[in-house]
Length: 108
Length: 117
Image (cartoon, rainbow over all chains, first blue to last red; front, top):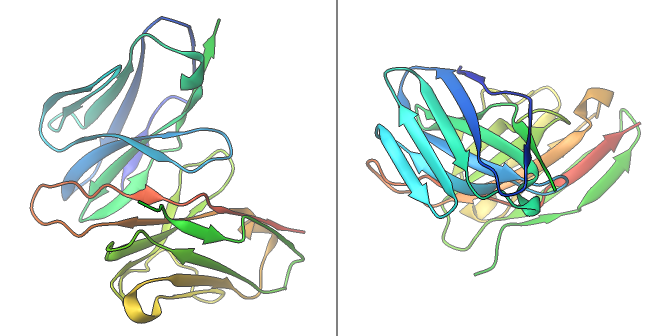
């Protein structure tokens, strides 16, 4: 299996930037996903990294370093609607394993 | 494009009773997944189908859980008998089968919230 670690909670102010780190240990790495999950709702796809580097998608960016087993999700220009849980998920041997999620609270 | 459909959305049962959940994936998605998400945790894969064959069921408690995907489209997940620790949200997801380094993005349904009392 995979050991996937991410912080439990983070708080930030509207308009600010927040970086959510994820570290993992795995073999057979096929890619890393970030999902957003609002309370009581299903996870929705945010980003996918399979090669090292930064992927930018609007206000959200995701970075991967395979040699370090490390990824981060960067949320810029935070909005109240960004308050949610952010799940780091590692695909290894074509099976997806999720971290416990980081709850981000955006304050006015 | 219609999303992943699941029913029921909520279910309350007593321990030792049986329960079944239904999932209809996005049209054309060959791969279907059932996840269990306990409050405060990430989703845990229970079983993965490709078409109507099982790809991975290593984390499915087979003494009480069963799943099938007849005809390679919709799927049912059953728990019999239920235990208190089965209280969770059961998520169904589907994805296209794409080879190489392409996406394996999974699309999730709204989930079924199960409470076992």
